[in-house]
Amino acid sequence: MEKINEFLRPRIPNDLLGEYGSITLEKTNHPPITLDITNNSEVCHLSAPVASIPETNAIPLLWSALELNSLSYGNHECWIARNYEEETLSVCRNLFIPELDTNNFNEALDEFFEIASGMRNTLLIDMDNSSLQ
Amino acid sequence: MQDYRLQLDHWLYAINPDLKLDENDGVFIETEHHSPILISLSEQKPICHLYAPLPSLPYDDLEALFIQALELNSYGIPLGGCWLAWEDELNMLCLRYDFNLARGDQVGFQNTLQNFISAMGITTSLFAENSPQLDNIPIQQTASQINYQQLA
Image (tube, rainbow over all chains, first blue to last red; front, side, top):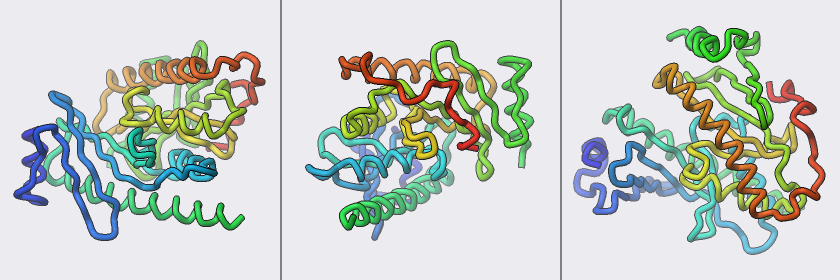
């Protein structure tokens, strides 16, 4: 956890990982990214909400999300999952902490902001198209 | 840039001397109880994709299937870091994993492959647990009928 706090300092000097190893980062016009680290884990889990699951006619959105997970879209090492508590879909990625340094950690965060933003927009467009049909 | 094709070929040879990337940078690995696994080298990144169709899932209730698939993807925990995706060309769910060749070694690759095969079994049994009628649902395609060329 201390290592991730060190990596985060150039980005957010005063707001580091809390007691539970979780922090949310924000960037204008991008979905917020949550970082989660469980105690003693070597994995830093990134997630960002990309869509809310509608109560009715959810299939088009779920389908699009699973399509975005496919090989064809080339979103390396990222995938979309359902968030149990909030009925939302989030894009996720696991970073292996021992392989990281400050530079590649922050590059991975920036890349993840862009991937999350792209996925959110794609799902919005797909939902709009399906509601028009 | 390092020759990741050579590196991957070397690791494949260690698993089975007959395994070698083809001219499209892909190779199929047969499994005992599941579909063959497609391993393909990324053109853009030092990554090899592990990919396997899951033809024996309950495709009669797509909403339930999709929700369960996306739940299994949560945190990457139930499937050991693998995730489920829908492949339009095959019209079915597939299991995926991206192995980073720049960070991994031969042992890591073999362990990943073993974990991937385990995840295929876990996925099938988890869907079966929640689908008591699974035995009555016709399977869309058997592994041998899957046209992997469509994915190339």
